Length: 137
Image (cartoon, rainbow, N blue to C red; front, side, top):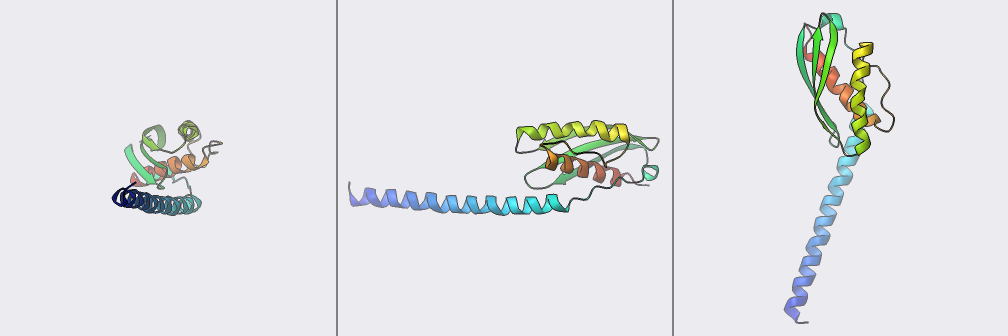
């Protein structure tokens, strides 16, 4: 093996180690920030009598999980919720989308989260809360 070839191999390996450290460190920082955001989510059902009729969009981003929803209100009742986008990292998080059925049924955001998809449930509920907040009279 020539000296030039060894230098190239060493340079490539060093570059790979540096990239691994960079992306690994970034992932650790993102996960820590994600956990903090999730732990700080507070879900409160707004007074629906203060929300005008219409369809309102809400978006919440917790770094690793985000949700964009449209919430329709008619006569101070939530009549429909559409999840436009739900970014999540795990397949089990898709189950969290069923939470919208309970929100419409109980007219409340204070519903049980979906087991195995708690964080996604919280992010979806927060997006709904923000949508309703934008419809306040």
